[in-house]
Image 1 (cartoon, each protein chain N blue to C red):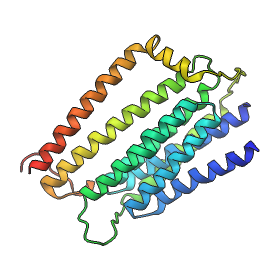
Image 2: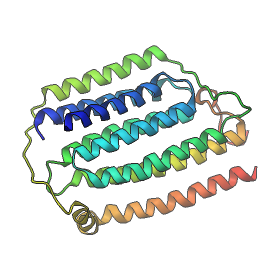
Image 3: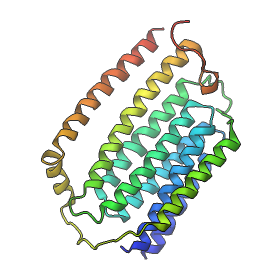
Length: 164
Length: 103
């Protein structure tokens, strides 16, 4: 049963990444990114990170893809034609990315991971909330500050752009 | 969850990271480069989450949630900057962007 789900999620992720790699249309790439991110959310559920899966669907698949679509709308001259974009340095990019992939695969294959079985945590979200406010309180407060700065900064930058 | 399954998830994360590297290195459009950065960050998050299942304190999952929030901030700021650049110099490809400031 679970192998079916795994194969389905793997196909989702691979199809999305393949479309992003081979398309020239930015809008198609944004929707393929949405497919990939939903597949990765499923992977998060399979590795028992349910809260991260929900955050992924809400913030990435909901927010980032919409933001990218708005970015395509605002930064290209739209006159009804397709929004295409080429690439350059193709061979250097292929060599470097295949090298990165081969190196990471080699490191994974030689690393002896010792896995211990942890019993499944039933109230995972409650425990994460408690550890946000106890163990990771500094990071939590800093991320709140960063969110405020990002909000004000993005509004300021967009206001300047609108004034031009 | 066995060790074999863990290495499969790590291979998936390596694939995502390498694809993101290729897109960042080769694409001309700034939006495509942002998509590549998203893929790389997702690869890192998959690694964090797949190791987090062996940790009773779930530190990897918490770090991944922080990383997701930071990525959303980064994308919003980057798109605002791109919008400014486009309004000023009508450029949306990174290789045509050879000057910044009020020129």
